[in-house]
Image (cartoon, rainbow, N blue to C red; front, side, top):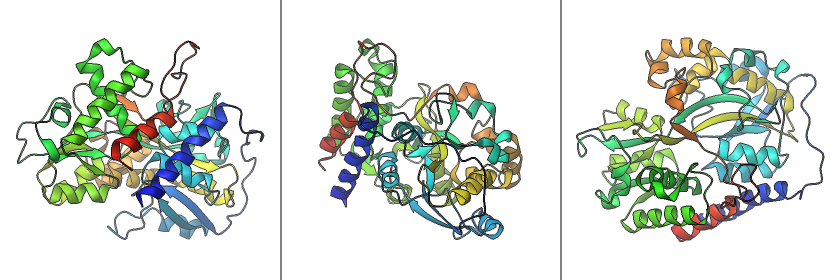
Length: 388
């Protein structure tokens, strides 16, 4: 299993390298001009929890109404992380999916996804303007998808063990809790180490935790090695992390509001906080494959997931911020206070969140003299770190 995952990581990183070097000779994909009848099915790559049909909780089902209305049967495959999601999209077996910023840039650059015609997505008009036309969901001013939701990576902790709410990420890094630290098993987690170094070692000069020069990258990896050697426990799926907290194997680590909500609903002694120095996080986008076999169903899905009912349910379920005021209003009927909890309209809160972004050799700026470690280097370092 681990070896298959590594192969997927390497295949995914090759996509961005080929795109940036001009390795692809195909013309840029174009947006769909008009919408036709649904093709009868839809094959999606998703983050777990992004396409619920009431199997876990009958109050949360936004897939069945879509299927009943459109006749498009929804088939889903969960990704383990963004690298895995990109590799899956490269297979050509999917019509689209939900992707975070460290995947979307690779998918757009590689021509794997197509721009979207927002005129064919009526609910797009209701989405908060602050979520549209960002670097992770547009290219050269052209929209490449429909925002799904956003949120920070939280510091989750066992309140029976850590009785005072932490205000920094120190408990994850200072070795105090040794092997009881929960770590997200993905190369993008290197950015969490870099973010900590921005505060604790300002002399390194880190300005962006995703764009690191040789010295900055080496310092981040060294911090991660110390964390690993202290016995950190790695999680790849939310269920793995929930189980490890429930068993008492871990007491603190990086997590999502989703896990916090699940464990609190089970009366577990769990809380989640956004530390003072901020956090990494995500802003997710639904994108359509440039060679989608069921493009009409995919467009129908993108409009559906942007509706008040579907987006309200989905974001409450996962514990992230809704993408429109209408979705916020609906979310409040399911979970009063949800939009306040997730800071849905609080841009100052999200100014502290560094959304997942693809590391680039040019440091994602226009200064040709600057050199950073690219996605390939991050994956290679993580693979070495984990001993895969």
